[in-house]
Image (cartoon, rainbow, N blue to C red; front, side, top):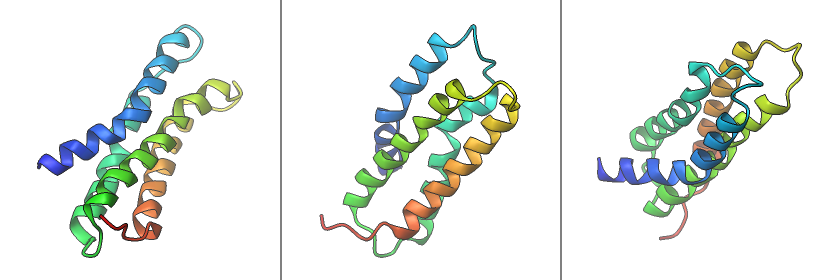
Length: 117
């Protein structure tokens, strides 16, 4: 459980400041939904399930690097929503970004080799 919480904090290091700043500065221009907040939880949960359930050859170095990379990608979601065109439905875009970044988490788990400790 301790490793899970440490990895979650590593995930939040790049994603939380950018996300909170985007939410704060665009609160009057964009509609923010619960799907936008889920970007801080769902992709990490998907990656963590893959990592802890099926990673026999991964090391603790992967536990520190992969969440950081996933957090950097998750930080792009509010930026994409900020610069998107108004013709795109904001709720669909938010849901799509959660699903897309979750798939990126699965791909990160699949294609990241075992790092030396």
